[in-house]
Image (cartoon, rainbow, N blue to C red; front, side, top):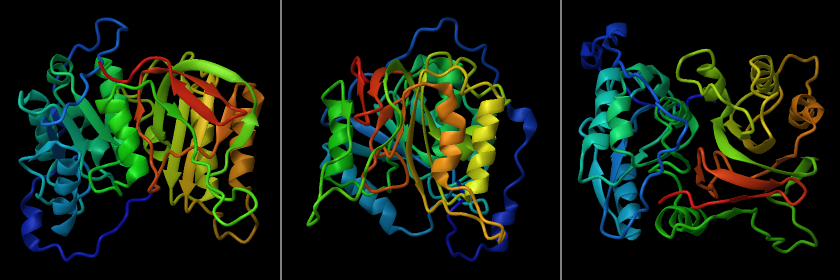
Length: 351
């Protein structure tokens, strides 16, 4: 996933932030059992905290729209203490961004937390998070793209179910907001299926499902952004146990050869051999490179790594850098049907 760029002149004052110290790591002994920590459902009138653990936003309007969107869902909004800080393209120093998230988990008035945006930089704060505080105060945490690093690290360290879904400045249309409401407010065991809309055509041309290998599988959902995921492989923050998981992936702005390299990393790292099912969402603006020697297609790359596994697999799910983006609970068990291109939670994603 390539970081989106924002045109902004950064003054010399921004250089006053010190480079992050590698000695600031917060020690936490980790999970004691394999049990999940499942957050409580949201209720109207509760508070959602907005944090910025990765890239910054330089305009003021997105903050206003985000606040108004969650107020429309019946929630109070609390902005993080460092939300508008700057350190280069990041929303503050590593220490500031980590502490902002730590504060939200510790805050008894905050019931859920959502990332303002993704971008890049979330992996820089993984060793500065207070995982003990997170485990002691399990809350809904939502985001996608670069936020994948936080989802995977929190799941590995604490067993907390987190939610791969829109960020605060995403497009909160009826599709995305309805999915979030059903999952997090109404405690539904959500069925994930693509919308059927032919428009003014004889057959559906948008949001089509492609079955890679037919069949059904059951397993815990775990995944996120492909490039962010592979970026933390080999670290203590990457999940160790992929046995029987249903892996879901998405990405944006990557050339096909890069997708191939990252899928190869998942294969060589032993992740693909362990999973029971595979779901590929959208790879928005993922195109061949300009080498002049041709390129594999995205389908060819995915099929190369997934078909030999012989597990149920499909692509085209509503997961990714798209307006109609579903919210998925990492760690919750689901049943997928690769021929239909659907997956459904066995149990609700919140308590």
